[in-house]
Amino acid sequence: MISYNPSLPLISVHVPKCGGTSLDQVLEGWFSATHLYDPNKHPRLYPYISGNVYLQLRRFLNIGYHRHYRMDLFQADPIKIDLENTYGLLLNKRIPVCIHGHFNNEKGYGVWDYYPTAKQFITVLRDPLEMALSMYFYINQNFAKDGLIYFDQNRADPRPQQSLNGFISGHKINIQKYFPMELNVGNLQKQLNTYFIHAGVIEHLQTYLDGLAEKLGKKKVEVPVLNAAKRSYEPSKDAIDRFKDKNKLEYAFYEKVAEINA
Image 1 (cartoon, helix red, strand yellow):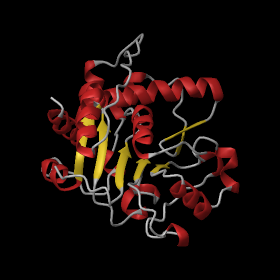
Image 2 (cartoon, rainbow, N blue to C red; image 1 turned 180 degrees about the vertical axis):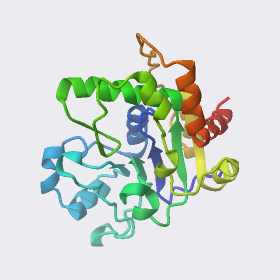
Image 3 (cartoon, rainbow, N blue to C red; image 1 turned 90 degrees about the horizontal axis):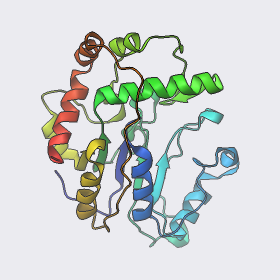
């Protein structure tokens, strides 16, 4: 894998349902000297924020951490961080930058859609079946409560009455859409060695973060261990087999990354 270059932006690809919240808090602590309003956490103020003023203020306060998430409430794409614009008096204000979030090549806000020169990445993956199960229960629970939710920048509307087996057996994750570089079963090690500073799996998140801290020259941070949610029912073996057949790349990528943290 490659060595970290603090003069270049670090892209953290948050694959949905892969522990992005825990990683978000750690990365913000590492790359920000202080906290400032974040439009992703206060969406109703989003229309009143000027991108240039917002970025200038963050740089002035030594905040190098930026989130990349779509504002579904306003149907607004993520804010683009102008990495080349140094804003006059802040010409010499150079701080390490990390951009973390849901990138999506199919929606027009993939990594290289926004940052075509990006070349150093980190990410956390998860057992593909656990991703699908988490998504199923998340969507159905929230649909039952609110009637309308968004997931992965799409309006998510799987009917609550859809069976778990039906959902799992037909579900395709399509992890490729989150990463700019081409991924296939045969080139995973090459792409990891070419583009990634570090990669890990949520099942060994602390090991991943400890290794990442060393590579970035940051202080190690302990993250709480989350207990696996208990489920009243599980998919059948037949549904799981069908799911695995549809997600061969996802399993190959997950298993390759898991070896790094073994």
